Length: 550
Image: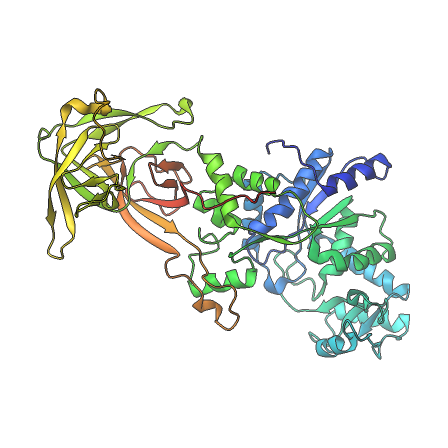
C-alpha cells in the first residue's frame, strides 16, 4: 500500500499508549462475519485497521467472526479474502472465531464457577420482556440464582446436545438495572444445531458476538480493537468479558464514525434480496458498492484507499456522496488510462470523395496527461462511425458545435468533413450521412483562419471491433418512502446496454481500463471474450461533485 501521512484521533491514542509503555507497537484486526460480501463502508474499517498497524510497526490480522453458522458460508469467506487482498491490505495471520471455540467454552465455564454466568430457561421473547427498556429497569430471571453446580451441569448438557434448540441459553450475570441495556444479563451462548463450515457438526452451541469478540482480541494480543460507532455502547460489556474471563492480554476498543454512502444499498439483507430476486447480476454487479462490484466496474483499489484517506476519520456518523469517490477515480485514471475512440450509438458517415478501398493510419496520442503512454495508429477509410448525438438534421443554432447539413467539422486526428445529405430507413431513422472531405486538412494543419464547427471523434467503418457497452446509474430511486416495497424502488434505467464499436486492436484482458474519447472511463468486464468485448462505464468524464467550502 502506498505510504500516506494518516493523522486522526486514533493516531493520538496509539502514540500515547506507546509513549506510556502500554504497548511497543499496534496490533489490529478486521473481523468480518462471512454472511455476505464486503461493501465500500467496510473499506474504512479495513484500511484504518491495516494502516494503523503498518504505521506503528505492528501487524494486522484477518479474523472471520463465524459464530452464527446459520447465515455463513465458505464462499463468503473466499470472497472477503479476495476483496481485502485486492485493496492492498495484507494480513499477518488468518484466523477464525471458531478456532477458539474450546477456549471460549472454557472461559464460559470459568464465569459459571465465579458466579458470573447462569443457564436460563426463558424464551427469547421472555428475555426481551424481562430486559426492560431505556425508561424501565430490567427484572431478574427466575433462573438467575441456580447453584454453580447445577449451572455447570446444564451448560455441559447444552454442549452435549441434551436440550432442544432454543430451550436454554447461557447468560452473563451482570446488572439488570444498568442504564446500559447491553449489561442486563446478556446472552453469551445459545443452542443451534447447524453445520459449521469450519468445525462441521462438532458443536451445537455457539457463542454470541459480544462474548466471543473480546476473547478473540485478547487471545491474539490485539492492542487496539478499532470498530465503528455502533459498538460504543457495547464497550462496557467488551471490557467486562476481558476482565471476568481473566484474559492475559487486555485490548482497548476504540470507535470511529461509520461510513455511510448516500443513495447506496449497503445492508447485506437488502443486497441479498437484490441478488436472489435477480434484480442484479450477483454480489459483484457493478451497480452495487460491494468491493467486488466496484472492482468489476473498474474502480482502482488505489482510488478507494485515497477516497478513505481523503475523508479522514471522524468520531461521528455522517453521509458521503458517491460522487466524491467518482472524482477520486477520475483523478487516479486521468494519467493512467490510455485513450481510445469508441462509438456507443453509431451512425455511419460515408465520405463520398474519399478513394474507394484506401485505408490510411493516423497518429494519435494515448494520453495527453502522460506522454509515457506513447501514441497509436488510428485507421481511416471511406466509411467511419460517429456518435448519433454528434449529428443534427435540422439547421442548428449558434451553440451547436458538431456536425449538421452544410456544416463542416473536423474528425479528430483526421480531416475536415462537410455533411451534404442523409439516408433514412423505413422508420425515419437516419442510417447514413454523406459528406465530403478536404484532403488538405489532414490533422487540421494549415488552416488557422478556417475554423470547423467542432472536433468530433470516430471509429473506422471496416477496421474496428464490435463492443457491448454497459452504462450504470443509481440502482435505487427512493430511499425515503418506507411504504414502497424495496423491490419497487429499483431504477429501471440503472443498467443501459449499448452496442457500438471501438478501435481495432484493443486488448481483451479483463480489468483493463481506457478513457473513451469525449465520453468517460471504461473497463473490460468479466463477461468479455476476444470475439465479444464487453465494457463497463466506470465514471463519466464530467463530475457533478462539488467539494464543500469552509
